[in-house]
Length: 134
Image (cartoon, rainbow, N blue to C red):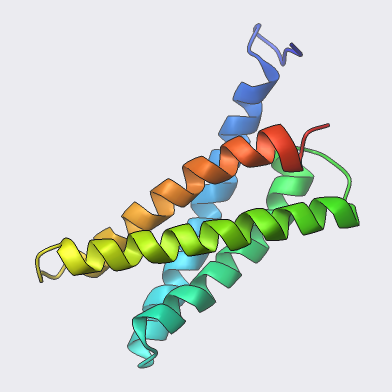
């Protein structure tokens, strides 16, 4: 197993960088989601648009910085397949949360956070082991 300084495994550095990229991408995602809702888009349309914006940001930064691998058509296609699958998972999670959470002011942001959290966990594992494996 490769190591990166202070005897930390390589995956630890990737996880930290992935977390930073994820936080930035999540802010893009949430901002677009809330803007879409503010502009009157349906919840699912706003979530789809926000997912696309966050995903584009995540691909560029994760490939170059978090995992430090060169681009390729195979990687781009694998990333698209993963994020397409994740898209279905986050939509289902978001819908389930919206259907079951009480109708309060925090319902929509919490549904987003739950769907984003599950999607993020799945993405790191598959990106590290499959898509951006060096």
